[in-house]
Image 1 (cartoon, rainbow, N blue to C red):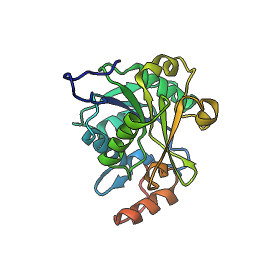
Image 2: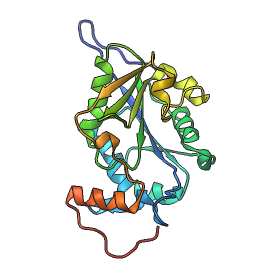
Image 3: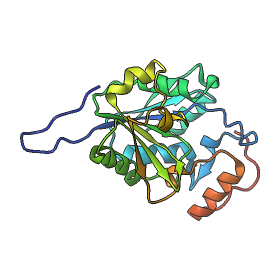
Image 4: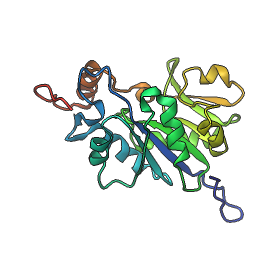
Length: 221
């Protein structure tokens, strides 16, 4: 993976590829698979990945695990490739490593996205790429809102071997503390980067925020 150049005198465009983590067990969703829950008529994971695609990455790799076939079916027709992670029950770091290892297209930076951040839109993803291009120091960008660390995390493609080898985990909560010289904190103006969907209460709050009607009954997925 490497950055692409441009004509003489032009500012090179910072290209990015996205790894979408969609392998988790949804263990706090009381029997439902959070990524398949409907939001505005489509599965949550499709809403997220559609927004990422609209931000025009070079490539999108979706890492699957728990109910992987259903997740793949929910994304049918979208411009993605899939990478199964048979070790997904061992934690998020294994999915990050598997997804980054599966990237093939040249790019300048890699963005590690959470499949349940359904409030983010294409402009939010582009905001992080622009912030990375403008940051005064560092090679890893982490969005923060009101003191809370968020996602996605963006890192220079040159970090890929360290991520694949487990020496750097961009999903680690201790990332800022353990790599202060490498990490740039992007102060976000909104909480969408810090909002995900882990529990039924989270799902209800997100539906209310989007003005979407709740789904009647309990849908087990």
